[in-house]
Length: 104
Image 1 (tube, rainbow, N blue to C red):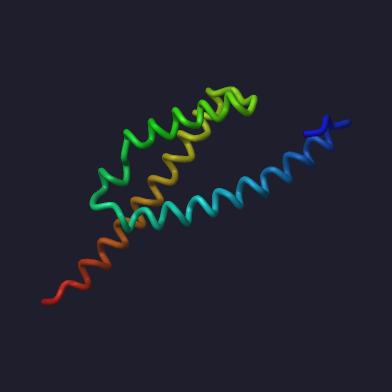
Image 2 (cartoon, rainbow, N blue to C red):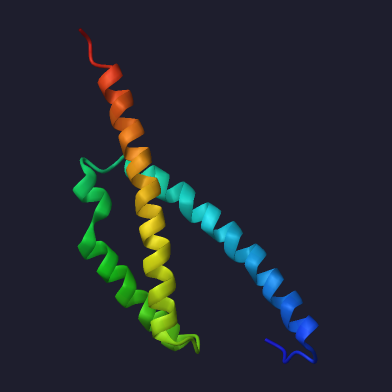
């Protein structure tokens, strides 16, 4: 990272990073939707122990990347909550599809 010489330059750099972050969030979203197919119930989707493991890992990554761990945790908790909601919808859709395929 090079030091910026103006606020405009800072904003250009932030905009560039936002494009990358959103692209990565899109990729993460596709994996989250795939994960829904492997989970048996909504408790498995919510997976509180997994959430806490991810938060601990991210806090360590934050420290290694000169980021306040609290900022990383807050961002990840919000992001994970949104992805869980999305995955719950996908899981319900898949379960409905499975129910439609049961022979009668």
